[in-house]
Image 1 (cartoon, rainbow, N blue to C red):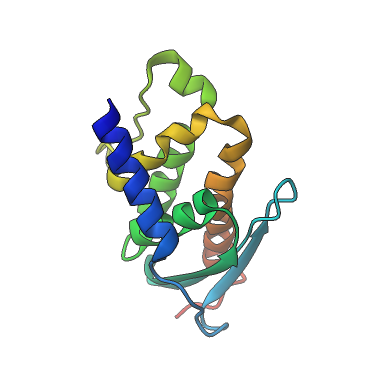
Image 2 (cartoon, one colour):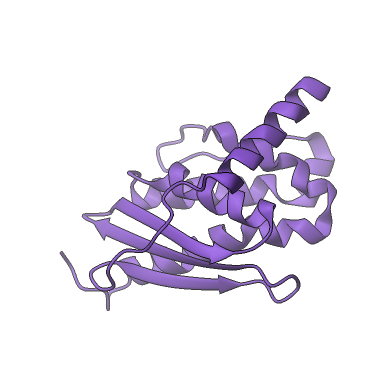
Length: 162
């Protein structure tokens, strides 16, 4: 379906050229995690402000390829304002979509949140085509793995309660 592929390409290029939530947050109170892909040199830093179990703000910085930067931008939009549980469910759904094996089986990935509601990935579906290029999957998941580290830090018992 060439029309859909073109649309997906435009979404990725838009997020690459105009990254959303670009910048930093003051640490502390924000939490900070860094990710690095040694295979290609992509780097990402994720800053999270988590208050009362909700991602109230998220900022990203870094450098890398168009897939890495677009995925980080799209991730920041997808999780901002969501509960930590929702952010983790979106992360699982996205990483499931990036799994070569699941996509080879039937081309779909379904994830549900803690209430059993199906997770809709929306614009994140634009990155589905990355699974055709195994070496690029790490580019697409770098920000998501880094987000997980940041969420772990923000929700650990050692994290100050606000």
